[in-house]
Image (cartoon, rainbow, N blue to C red):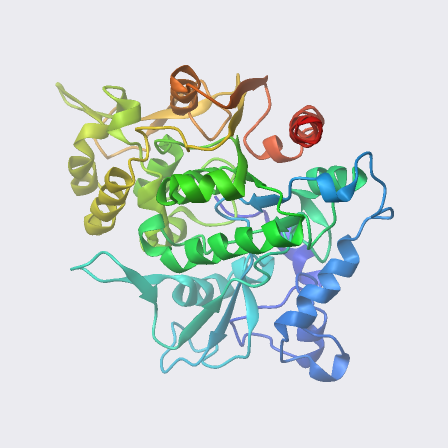
Length: 464
């Protein structure tokens, strides 16, 4: 699963550098890095000022009309966006004492390590993997950066994920939704904010992040005429939003939160999480070799949070193995057996994630806010089972079932259960046929439905 040579060649011609690799390094190459605005002038090409990066990005993504409004701006419920797992930008600073290869860098100032195409090129990808991996404490299940690597998720509170590659404005993400909100009177950095996070961490490691999110919501409450916040979470952002809200008291949620809107939420995990950890493959991720992806994600506690959970997947077969006349079917209830079959040695992280889900009462009740809205994609073939027909001597077959291409339809039952049990407040569950997982943030029909939902909140509150 590697990028085609022609694509690699074109990336090289574009001047995409090996940010954590000294191979073919030059000041001119560094200063032409298209994915980041680290370099605000040509004379400072080997350093980065995070604030300058963010300011430049804000200029580039500003819409033409930032004042148009169909409602008084003071009457708008502020919006906080949480992105999917791989969307947040992550920066690194190196002060290593050892390196994977002679061409890898030992020292660097701040640079964007995720997501930058230059990090994924042949030669550079080994340096990237060595710098981006986590070390796991075998006793506690907590993880940390490797020695000599600092990381930072910049721009908390602002929307820096309109595009996956914001410099080139490539791979549209939240841009259509944010632009649509701006058109009805929302303002970037004031009434529409973002809460990026480190994709490598499971919620049990994210106490600092959740505290920052709490403080952000309290701040924008004051800045927006004491209006309650609408949290919108896509994919992992939806799962983390639920975890966060389950941690908050009823009194806090009643005061600060209007609604939780989830888009393609992987409540209960997904088979695709299992394929990444066991096989090193995932639908739509084709820039890593399988072994590179597998080795990397096995150090991320976040991946254990997205393994299929027996409380959602029940008795559904997730792995089948036929060997001679023996046929073994495994379910999510037998995950430790799955780990042993694939030599996955970080079971402690999975156990910590399970404990955090249990203690959080993650599936037991709805988020406990005034409104709950769930938008899901349906009607697309989605990995449902890994099937080996001749032991492990051949590549497995992926058996497909219903879903949005990434999240299995069975996960939607969590939302449906909320709707059936809610005794007060409002709720909405809506399926979008043939809308894929990533398109739930940018499909015109979905974006329109989100904006209409928010407009209803704003109008109804003004009538009261």
